[in-house]
Length: 235
Image 1: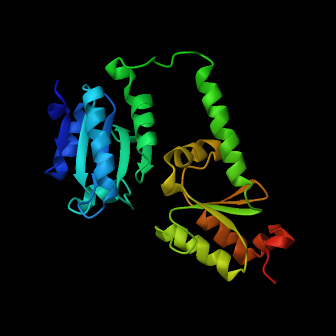
Image 2 (image 1 turned 180 degrees about the horizontal axis):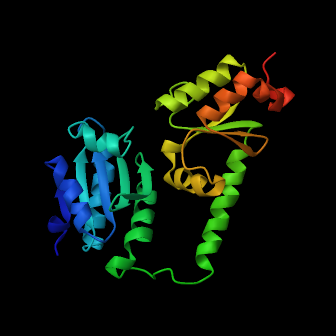
């Protein structure tokens, strides 16, 4: 299969969905815009990778033209490269981080193309999980009050995140935040780590409190204020 045959320029929204449903392998989705200079660098790398991994399909999607696809994959910046398998997102790389794009494609698509060694060691997967868990623990304890939201505290990107940030601000609680849209590994890993499947998530002193509904109930009962460390309450 030539590089031109495994690079697909999306012309119809149904085309991507139907192709992903039919393939059992990982696919690379490259979101771009004509006005973004960084896209040129990433597109060049995507073209080279398509040659190196001929059994993998590479989709090129103009983000602003196909708004439904961009919304479904929560595209907030271009260039963005997503590695997916059917409906599951395996990796997300935003910006012109070409080294990370190459690394993630190699990691997720190498085995299907006979490139590199397939990870099969019984103890390699737990080691990866431990590394991620260590990172997640560090993020959770970055601040005494920590929220994991979509977007930033100044510009939340979903209604629930906006509501949680608003409630904390109203209570004059000082908090740190992490934008889960910037890191797919954290976004998916934290759900498993915390055993909490949705966002946003609020942590106090390293312990999960919950999401919007629980926080709202705790504010109404007065319980939340009592849990906040003194240093995290604005005077």
